[in-house]
Length: 348
Image (tube, rainbow, N blue to C red; front, side):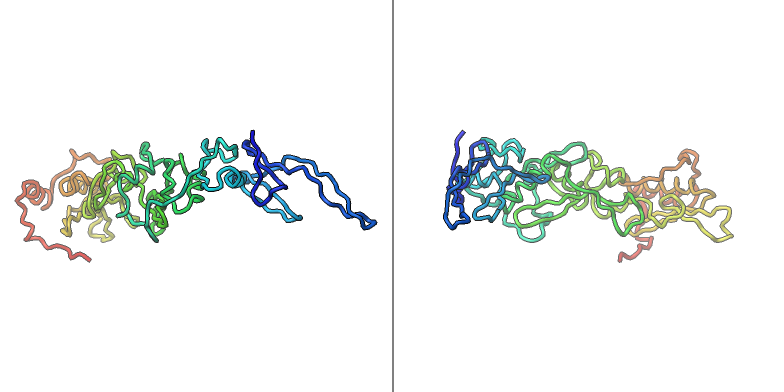
């Protein structure tokens, strides 16, 4: 074990390669009542250290009754590697301040020059590979390179707070009354820029290497971010996969209930919209049968992007009546439907 003088406290304190700080044995002047001055021996002792939660070891040093706290790792750097920068604790334990557990570097140069808000366009598959490990629909923070951070103190905070942990948080949509309507999001900092991104888009980019216009959840569940549940889409096709609106009163997508007493025998009406074209699918005595009508039309028009109703009414019991099911359905299926003959709803 080697002891070194502490810069700025020479003759008062020393520090060892084991991370211990001791006061130096010395004589100090003492003023006596008779006006004379004598000397008193102050023996050497190991100084007590303290530590707050998730913080490193600190020690209080004093000269002329002025006490100042210092991080022990910083005192080690000044005493043993004055021209270097402290990087991290080798074993990840910030209470282990032995010199053998401290990693130093010659300089720190941030890799990125981003400023302000970090955009999705700045992210690449290679960047995400240095940040995350994918595990069953989740992203786990890796020990990121120090060059990702503008300052080494931010890098060390990341190692303590996030490295090895699941990335992100659940962000519920504040404009929705549905508790399960929202997305998992992840905040990423690169240099001086920071941005928050949807988890499922990060996973898609990490594993596929590119980002489409829309990353769609096959099952419509925004919390299921397993890669097998994610697929490429666009805003048009993504709208096909939307769940039941919160203002829906029938309990089924594409189904509404009429209050007209003339429709009391068949109060449930089914309809579907595709690219601005609205098709009436008929009226039915039960919401369940009307929901099946919607399912059949959705599978025709939306194909794999259809978000179907979960209904007990079996498709084989559905009666194919009405203009859509006796004429339009088959013409759309065969590619002979005359779209120009049907008016299209204007897009807002």
